[in-house]
Image (tube, rainbow, N blue to C red; front, side):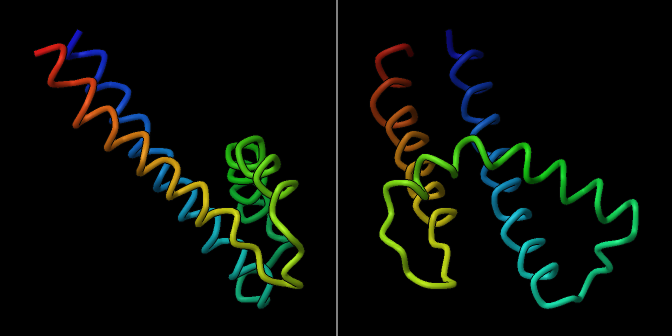
Length: 96
C-alpha cells in the first residue's frame, strides 16, 4: 500500500512541474519569445495544453474574469499541494 501512495505522490509531483512548464511556455508564447510556427515549439505547446487544460478548464469557469490575468494554474497548484500534503500527513501514517 505504501508503494501506491508513493506512486500517487510522484504523479502529483510530475503534474506540478508540467503545470509550471505550461505556464512558463504560455508566457514565452504570449511575448513572442518562441517561434509559434516552429514545429517543435508547436508540438511542445500542444502537448502541454492537452495535459493541463482538462484540469484548468473547470477552474477557469469558476474564477471571475480578471482581464488578461489567468490565475487558474496557481489555484490548481495550491489544490495539488493540498492533496499531496493530505496524503502524506493523513493517509500515509494510517497505512504504515
